[in-house]
Length: 111
Length: 118
Image (cartoon, rainbow over all chains, first blue to last red):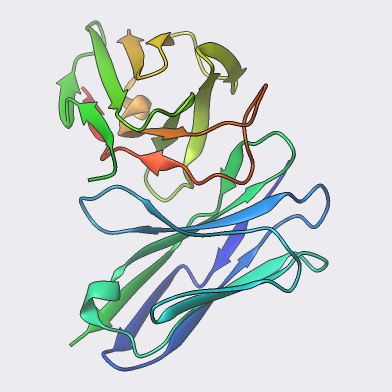
């Protein structure tokens, strides 16, 4: 059984704080690691698709790193804003092309 | 707006009813997915269609019956559901690789149908 674990489950920060969360995934048969942002009452939206060990991707104040040998990825948000409040999902993909999702980290940014 | 629409957005049904969920994608993708999200659980893949052929049936009970008449439309037919089937049902699409699904392409999700079974 393939397991994708995310921590913490939830996080409350003040506006302006920087924060990070973790996604752990199987290190064997790795093809890609996806990050999605899911705002309340909206659709999940892709942030990053990462494939290479050591890869780092950035979109505005959000960045992600990938370690495929040890099976983890970090998502960082610099200077959190209230509009960053959402659930952040990671998903592991092997050679099947199907995504296995973690439970998500729910971020609440207080103004 | 992700280019994937789902109807209805909310559905309440009795255990003896038959209903259908509809998904439509306007992105020209060739793979479509049904996911289920129950409270406090990860998104769970139910069915995958690639090039209109079902490639995954993830041990889903037969009271859920998918249909993919063409690459833009996906249905989930529901009959004699149980209260524990109450959940958010999400549809997604992606561009597959030649001959199958792609691990590298992001999935585009619809807003979901919130289903309540009484």
